[in-house]
Image: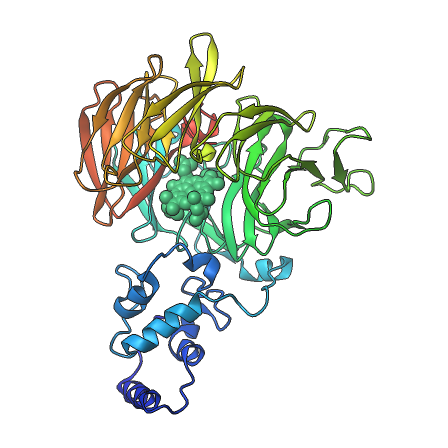
Length: 517
Ligand code: DHE
C-alpha cells in the first residue's frame, strides 16, 4: 500500500461511504484492495513490492494489528497510513477480508521461481574481504524492526555494513561452508544471497509463497527451502540461485503436506524434512552416492533406481506427527516433539524407525535445543513453549535428567564449547525481560540478567572463542548487548531496530554444539 491516493480519490471514497451508510451497494473490501493495495501487494494478494497479504502470513499478526497497520502505516517501511482515505468500517472490513483464504490454492512452480530471480547488476565478486576483520568471527544480527541485517566484527563489535533484507526474515540465515556467503529467507519465500567479503547483495529469488526456513547442503552447492505454500521443497543452486528441483510434498499415500522445516544432516549428505500434515519424516539426498536401502523396510527411495535423480527422496513413516526436530551431533538420531505436547520420540535415521519415547511435556521447542558434555554423557536442553521449564535430556538413555524451573516459557537457548554456562531466555509473560544463566554441570540457574526492565530480552549468540555473548533487546528501539561471557558483565550496547537472531560465522559453519544448526 505504498501509493497515497489523490484528494479526488478521497472525495470519491467519502461519497462511497455515504452510499454505504444509506444502504446502497458498496463494492467492499475487494474493491478497496484493488484500489489502494494491489499495486504494491499484488493483484492476487501474493505480494509485490510489499509482502503477501494472505492468512498464512497475517495469522501471525494477532488481534487488531492488521487494521492498525492499514490505519496507521508501518514505521520505517514504505507502508503509509490509510486512515484519511478509509474510514474505520472500511479498514475493519479490509483487514477481515485479507485474513480470508484465497479462492484457490496459488501455484508457484519452477517457471514462476525463475521469473522472480534477480541478480544485482552492480555486484562484483572480490578476491579478498574488503575489510580487515577476522572472517571467521563475523556475526550477523537480524533487525526485524526495519528488515535489515547488521554485519558485525566479532572482535571490535564495529558494524561493517547494514543491508536491507526481504520483509519478515524467519529462521537462521545459512552460511556457505567457507563462511563467505550468507543466504537469508523471508516468510514470503524470498531467498537473498549476500556476499560478506564484498558487503554486497548478490541477488534474490522467490522460492515459495509462504516459507518456513532454509538449509545449506554440506558441500555448499544447494539451498533447500521449506514451503507451506505451495506444498513443496525448493532446491536452489547456491551459485546463481537457479532452481535445481521443486519437489512436491505428497505422503506415501498421496496426501499433500506443508513442510514445517528443513535441516541438513552433513554426515548423511541429506536434507531432513519435518512435515506438518502427515506422520512422515523425509530425507532428500544430494550426495553422489545416496545410501542403498533394502526391500521390506518401512521406507522407500523414489527415483534412485529409475533414472539418475540427483535428489532421491526417502519417506519414513513415524508413529506420530513430528514437526519440530532436534538432531544428535552424529545426525543419526532425530528427537521430535509430538503434536499434542504430551511427549516425544526418537527416530533412528539409519534404520528408519522409532527407538525411544521421550518424557517431554509442555511443548518443548526442540528446534532451539543445544547439547553439551555433562559428566560422562551428553545432554540436550530445550525450553518449553507453554510453561516455565527447561528440560534436560540424556542423549544416551533418552531419560530426563532435570526439569529446570524458569521465570516463564522461553524460546531460545545458547551456549559455547568454551563457556561453563547455558543462556536461556524467558520470551513470554510478565518476566520477558529476564535472561537466565544456567551452570552446565550443576544445572542450577546461577544468575538472572535484567538489562532492560519491562522489555523483551531474548536470543543469545557467542563470539567465535566463546568469550562474549550477544543478547537482543527485542524491541523496536532495541539493542544488542555484548556481555563478557565469563564475568557476565555488560561490555557494550549497540542500538538496533528490534534485533532478533544473531549468527556467528565460525559457530555456524563448525556446527558448534552450543548453537542451533
Ligand atoms: Fe521461529 C527458528 C519455527 C515463531 C524467530 N523457528 C525457527 C526454526 C523453526 C521455527 C522450525 C528453525 C529454522 C532454522 O533456523 O533453520 N517459529 C517456528 C514456529 O513454528 C513458530 C512457533 C510459529 C510460526 O509462526 O512460525 C515460530 N519464530 C517465531 C516467532 O514468533 C519469532 C520469535 C519471531 C519471528 O521473527 O518470526 C521466531 N525462529 C525465530 C528465529 C529463529 C527461528 C530468530 C532462528 C533461531 C536461531 O538461533 O537459529
